Image: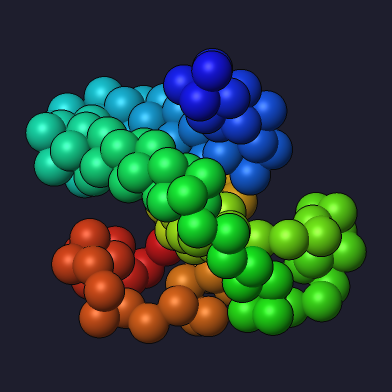
Length: 144
């Protein structure tokens, strides 16, 4: 009974579904970017695959922790985000899922811009908000 409850909890968790969707979109745009540049990158290579699988495995582990220990981290989420997402409680898995979504959205915009899609203004805003010391790929594409 507990295993079916766990599977149901994971399958019906909107935040987890958003992580999976963000990973799929990032992978698609990363592969398109790799085709355009004719070389592997952080999304279309073994490092990207390991990172994405690691995200999903960690979420499964954290969902198990949430099932055993009821923790509510909603106080760490800005009220505007809580209201927009309709969150009433945030477990460990949802908390990290929100961080993973933010990470993947940045990567999606980067890959879209590097694919030549008309998102350069959005990417410039995201890039200005985010520090460039976190990834070397940003250093090589400064003139976007």
